[in-house]
Length: 243
Image (cartoon, one colour):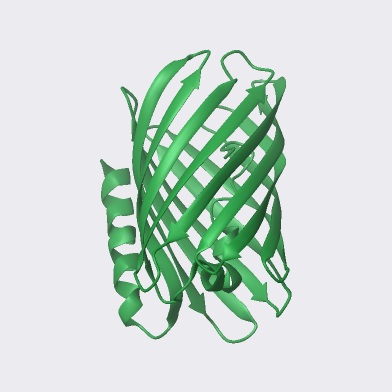
């Protein structure tokens, strides 16, 4: 219950910062995902949001929060903070995060970089994550290439690789995904959908994930402008939470 209350408070705060000139851009969204795996099939429902704050050129801070629930399991709440340096053609930064479910907390940190082209963005991170409650740690790299066919229509191709050490047993995974997001012109609302395939050495680690999102955006008026403000870094993932 504490996860739900904490994350709900953060998301409520993110929805209000649009009235504060200090907040450049952000969004609040609802998500649904269907996972089909060797370990079983299940549905997940969640809410998430982020706000990007200009702290004086070229620096900015990104704060994200999310909460999700899956069939017959405890809910998971997560918070993440990014400190980024934004340039005309590229951005880089560092991030720290925590994801908590009852009795288990994953801490993550890493480095991230984005290169901006005329109609596309290439972003990646290098990351490390650990869960001392269950003696698990992992490290990996995630990347995403986003193509803007218009300022409000974006297609994504993503990939991630990582290694997880659980109780002295190492396993590797690879994740590959595709998706899109469309923001209605002159409207703060956008819709999106995606598919991810995860393959790993551990039993039950192979999965197909299908998801859809509905978002309310504030600040920047287009998806491309939000991407260049720093949103491209949100959702890249860590070694213990592939796409």
